[in-house]
Image (cartoon, rainbow, N blue to C red; front, side):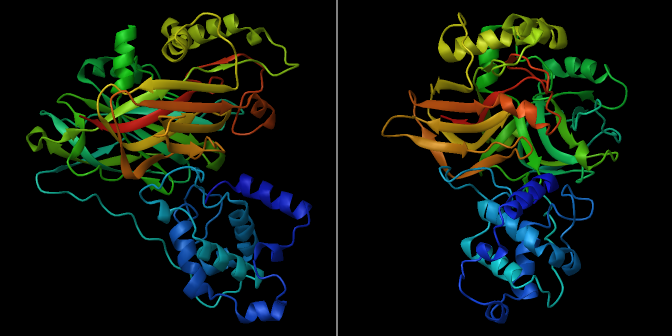
Length: 488
């Protein structure tokens, strides 16, 4: 459970509509005394739910705006908890009903019985009859026979910062695993140094040939690491062929977000980590929760090349972003040409080539680009592929995202559907049943954006009207599906 602002908005809206708390329970017609007589026990029935579903984020020093660790902290918020659960915003679980089942899903969402228990307890006054329960501590990585444990930590503490009015800081840190031989990452656990401000973490592999470029980036700014958004800032390649290779086998290693993160890959698989490779740890800091110095770390289990693991690869599925200014908006940057110049000025000449590349990749032509709030892209599978994990990624103007296999055919399958995009809840979802795709099958990403979010004054969204293209910054956007797959 997280965003205090979001909970407050939901609570205020429900109260303004004069929806009584009694409507949250399905026991219409019972009087107050009868409800209290059958109210669930806090210690026996409610406390285990709070510990399992809420307290992982709602703890002292956690990312949530208030703790839910003790009975005295929980009971006064009974109505607020019930309201957030009823509205479906807590616990946060972005995938919609069209999504398949994912590993660990039952640890994140509430069952119908758990929801009914929360409603009945809140309706009866949120009474307590004993102590709360502490959440289960995260388990240490399991080191199997032949594996080695790598403990990687940021080189020094970093105090997050951002420009006035901006509430997010993305920082990349270069970590050296100091491996002399080829290895494969088999599991990951990421421990945020300051859970209250660390919103999510992504680990990217840096190939030996890019280590020098990463070190140059690391030296461009004072303090540890460098500013980054959406990716590491390292080039994907200088040609169309190199860029397509980078899309088919990208550098994703592992990720972490509150309530989720860091697990073991399917048996017999691993993310290759060639000798001489390094790792970029990208940390997203949420400055709404403070600016405490952070020194996050990652624990990776690795197996040697002799284990002969099937490589786990990352397939990137980007779609073009072409968002015009809203009706009535006026600005120099409402011109697409000016927006391209702005991209080039901020991130270099190659960044201004990306929109054309994506139009060519997804639409077959970069001529006459037409703005649209909906972006889509199809990619054809060229070799038998097993899909294990799915991710959707957009920026601050995202509205929804969907990843599909063979859409519009009898073999159509939804891999991930997030109908209400929230930039601050980005996870990777491991399919409970891996999906096999054959050569010739098609995977599709569909994104919907809403430029009106600029007017909402949330999460540091810049308000200046502009034509929005694919880019790394907060004033830019992305439409990106990510699949972790094995091939052959």
